[in-house]
Structure formats: C-alpha cells, structure tokens
Image (cartoon, rainbow, N blue to C red):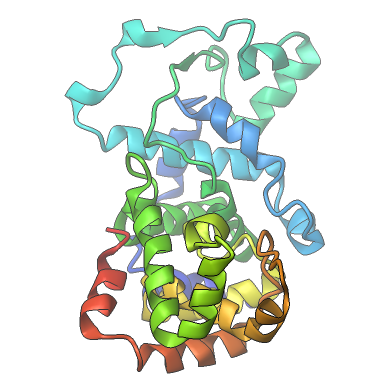
Length: 297
C-alpha cells in the first residue's frame, strides 16, 4: 500500500486541487437525485475483498458518490435540470422513507450522508448522474486516498474527462468498448476469437463490467491498483486491450473447455497483463487504435 499512489494518479489524470470546504458544501446539500440508486449499490462494492472492507466504509462511499452526482447535476444546463416542483418527498417505496421510520434510523441515514435537518427529501432520480459500476470505480480511489476529497477529485476527473461516455445516456462508451474488445481479440488471437464466437460468447456478454469499471470488478485489489498505475500513466482507454490480454492469459483453459465460463474472470496478474497489452499494441492497426483512444469520450 503506497501513500504516494493517489497523488501520482491525480497528477497523471491532471486532476485539479479542490478545497475541502467545497467538497463539504456538496455533502451538506443532502441527498442527490441519484441517492436511492447509490444506496442500492454501495453495500456490495468490492464486498468480498477484506482489505477494502477494513479500510473503506460504506458511509464514505455514499458521501463521495452523492457528491459526484451533485457535481454532475450542477454541470447540466439550467434548462435540463428539474424545477423545484419536480422535487418530491420520498414515498412509501422510497429508500430514504424506509430508513427514517425511527429516530435511530434517521440518525444513521444522516450520518451516512452528513446531511442536515430537512435533507431527507430528494428529487426524482435522473439518468446521467449515476450508473451501476460507478461505485466500483470509486472504491479503489477511496482505498488509496488519504481523504475523501482526494478520492472525489480523482473519480470526478476520471468520469468527466477520461470516460464520460461510460455514464452518458445509454452508456454508449461501454458498448463501443465491448465491441472493440471483440475487434482486438479477432486481430491478436483469431483462434480464440473464433472459438468464443462459436460458443455464442461476445464481449458484450462477458466483458461489460470489466470495461465499465476498468477491470475493478476483478480481484485481487492490490493487483488492480498496479494495473491502474499503468492505465493512468498511458491512458485508461488501454483497458480495452487489457481485457483482451486477460483472455489471452487464460486462452489454453478457455480453448480446452467445451463450455467456457467467463462470468467471472480469473484473478488479475498486473505484470503479465501489462506485458501482454504492450505486445498486443504492436499488432493493432492505427485506425483501430484511434477507435480505442476515443471510444469513451
């Protein structure tokens, strides 16, 4: 665990410095329009990783994602934001209402978001402020950072500058990404590509989460951090090739299986993935590489 990693990441992402008071101002605005969606995901973020669970609390993850949602909300044109009349007090089916049924539950909910009295009302959930998978992207930042502010700046910069297409609209960037995994694999390993296709396995089926989360959905966490060192140094877009490299690493096992199970990728080995990725890049035509560079924008 490196104390310098988060600072190196922020430099490589060209992330701006943020005043702690500005972050706290986002927190004290209370529940964002995406709050219910966030609460539905945070409890399962890297839930099987003991290192992560010991270091990162669910409360900090909720606060950070809620702040990101507010920041994305503020970046929208005024005409596209909901008016005050669109705000609603959570109904009986709302996550916030169910938690506010007793004083103890209210205190816990308030502690999770650092909200003040009256912040338990929320606007109608909107697209583009939070998508499932952002919680997994935020996890490694919180694990590596020494403060929530540092993690917030990194997550926001990654989402808005490096891969905005992953959270915009219908997540077009992710769909382009999985299509590119198929293309890359057909170029660097036609045999493996044809075998997977013959089994009805396209990257859309097995690689969607790996693209969306920059492989953060695959353990172990220490290896992921090393892989992110590489991705942030040379560009997060290279995760497309890294996913293909993960398949190549286990090609013999896949080819030997009459029914390959790619629901969960084998554990990450950052050094091997990086070496294979660099090798694969020499085989990829310039036009395909340009698609990889721009797919998440």
